[in-house]
Picture 1: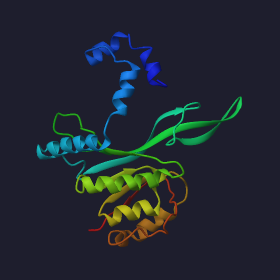
Picture 2: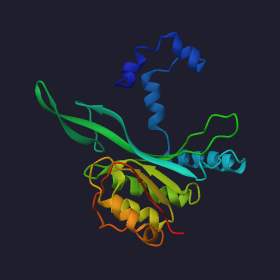
Picture 3: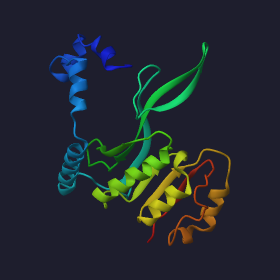
Picture 4: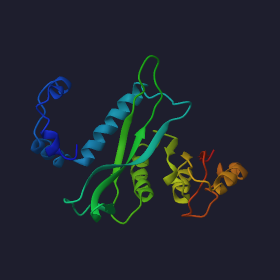
Length: 227
């Protein structure tokens, strides 16, 4: 669905009443409720849920680690409507170039293991909107500062895609005693060779690459935190 108004056009479908147990509310109601949400209160509620789950031992290790995954997600895009927080990009169409406005959030999801006979639980800890003129990694680092303050021991391994294979990201996690597992997609092998040669050094100090440089390769790379 491209918008809440588009969602409202199918609100009479029986699916919604079967799934929700009641008719789907209007687009105005959905927008009004979301506009009144308080982010700090929502984060406090999520933290309360996490504490209860942890206390009840329902967040087991995932292959021996407390794992979280970090990734960027676009929530919506429009060629017409935009706000001061919108990102912009130029799209080539058959009618020429058009400026598209969109929002992207970086989210941090906890990936605990599964209890016997149970489906694994997935818990969204927090998200951070990407600001205009900044890249996704910068947004992710700002998110991690807030998350690590609220959940200092919730995870010890962060999974991320190749976009996050940069020295500032690795150095930040090593400085905070966390491990990183990143999949490298291109053909540059410098960081893979370096990580093998300096694996012991990685475990004691900062990532052994220049700040701000990008890394390359075709396989997962593990950057361990301090021992």
